[in-house]
Image (tube, one colour):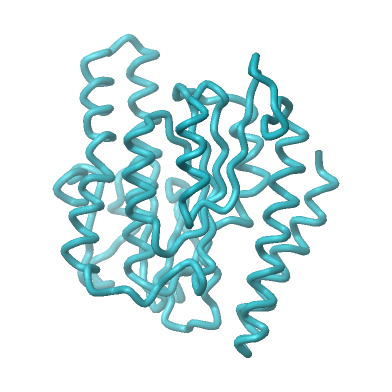
Length: 277
C-alpha cells in the first residue's frame, strides 16, 4: 500500500514519534493500536476517522475496533480507494483531466496491490471465514461514479451499523475486491440496473454475497428490481436485521455472550432505523 500511496501514508513506528501538531492540515484517517487509542483524549479537526487494532477482544466491534491486522489492511485499501476516487472526481470537475486520469490509474491499481499484500502475508491464514466472521460490508456497484443524495443518505443511515460502506463504478475493480474478501466478509450488494443480468447472476453464485439488490429504473421490470429509495432502505434494513439476528444466535450457541449481544444490539438499532424513512 505504501508503494502505491506513498504521498498519502505516514508510518510511525513509535508512539513517542507521533505528534498531532505535525500532521498535514488535510483530511486524515488514523490506524492505531488500542494502547495508543487509550491515550487519545481528543482528535484534531482534520482526523476524519480512527481505526483501532484492539487487543481486548471483548471491545472489538468491527466498525472502529478490529481484531486483526488483516482487517485494517483491507480497511486501508477501502479508504484509499474512496479518497482517490473523490480526488479524481474533483480534478475532473475542475477541468484538470491529466491529474484526474493519473488519479484514476492509481485507483485501478489499489486492489491488485491489495492482492499482492494478501498473498505475501496471509497465504497460510485460513482460519477466518464467513461462518465465523462478523465483518459485514455494504457495497454499491454503480454504472458511473458520482456523488448523489441517495448515496449520502444511505451512508448516513447504515454507516454506524455495518463494518464498511463502499462505492464502485468499475466492474473489474469490484471483482478484484470480491476475490480478496471472499473468505471472510459478509457482503450486501446494491447494483445499478444498467448491469447485465448475467453479471447479476454471477454475483448470486458467490458465497460471500448474502444479498443482491438491483436498484434503478429499468424497462425490463421484475420482482428483484427496486426503483425507489424508501423501498431500497426497507429491503436492506430487513435483510440486515435478519443477518445480525442470525449472527447473534450463532454466537449465543458458541457461548460468546459479548459478540452475541453486539449482534443483537445492531439488529435492534436497525429496527429503530426502520422508522426513519
